[in-house]
Length: 337
Image (cartoon, rainbow, N blue to C red; front, top):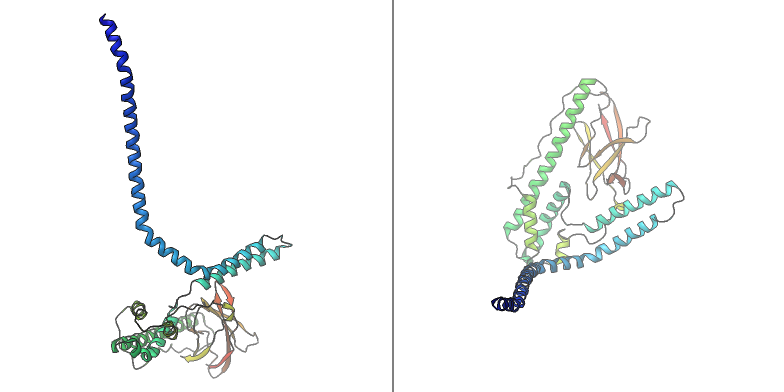
């Protein structure tokens, strides 16, 4: 009798135990779903916080589309040409060269900035801004300090750059003299003459001429009456046209310092300059030097004392380790021993 009752109770409890297990399993699933919802909420929160940055990136990308669309088409065309059957090895080299030139040219088209990359260009920008800014002072509400600071910075940086070039040329003279003294050759035995500092010296300014210029330009562009036309006149607006390296042509001039010719040139958008010389010795124009920074002193030993010679120079710019553009006009100078 008792055994039958116990068995009946067990039979009755078995469904309840099964229900209990189902509830336990359901609870675990609900906890898992809850955790997933928390993770999703956290992800959505992060995305929401990132939306302003994503929106700005999309706006920037949209503004960049016109400038990069044509370069991409050019690269695509060059790659399409490269897929054509190559009749010979020479044509393959020509196509590869065309692809490289296209990529380099497009890089130049899409990376323009108003700030020059080299010191000579920065000095030119400082000089131009110092000379041009005063005519906009009243319109833009600039103070006297705004003008005088630009002028002092320009004068100080130009003087420093010019003096540095003189000292570098002087060092080259000593190197040439040392080699002549050690090995012998044509040339006089006089000590190299040190350059004299130009007078008057401009007042020294605080370090940070270019960061100070960048901060001033950024402030200038926030002023009420500032316009893009003013920025273009001040050279503080990036060039919107494509940079065509085939139009580059150096402009040379010559000074004599301590008897040696100094070839004066500006760098512009090129990476270097290649200079050739004809010393009227029957060899015609021969390679002289590749320089990355202006200016260039010809440290070749001078003619023997009491004699003279006419030395001719020409140059061509270099970009990405290749000659680009046109040869300069030939400039000449008479040197004597």
